[in-house]
Amino acid sequence: MTEATVTLDWRDLLRKSEERLEPAWLRKLRRGALDLFEKQSWPDRTDENWRFTDYRRLLPESLGGEVGGTFAGTEHVAELEEVLSQGKVISLAETQAEEAGPVRVSSLLDAARQQDELVRRMLEEDLAHAVDRFDTLGLATFEGGLVLQVKDEASPEDVLTLRYRPRPAEDEFHSTYSYISLGAGSRGLLV
Image (cartoon, rainbow, N blue to C red; front, side, top):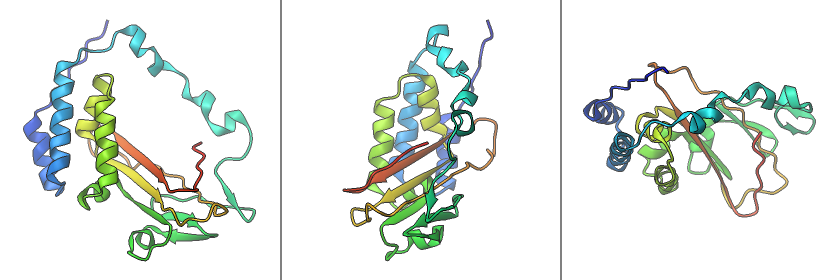
């Protein structure tokens, strides 16, 4: 059996958090996740089996059908910089403006810095439901992610297509969290 060793110093995590100008509540959440991580045992083989699932069987090309979404017969692929809304590709900067309209996209860290209560609630809920060391370690150390918010005034006929590819990690251990919040009357399909 292979043994894993993870050496983390909470002071290093908090220092990085301060350097990124993260809010105090996020540093507290990271510290709480690390404290929970230290109390949990490593998963046994049964708990760990799901990590050996062949994800390639779940890829869209394996399942058949179209990859991504369509609007007016044209597929639009959106990186973090672009989102298709109301039939046109809009930039990330446009979605962050006050008059952005029904769609807002931002990085998880930017949303946290802006004291977004929705993001705070989602991260705290994830920590409350963390079941193993992988969950808690990810919440303590995440460096990236995405928040997509569709407001209540979005038209149900509007098709929003987003394809997000996380950027490469700066270090060996890296996790990202992405959240989608749909307003009243909105529907979502996650593929």
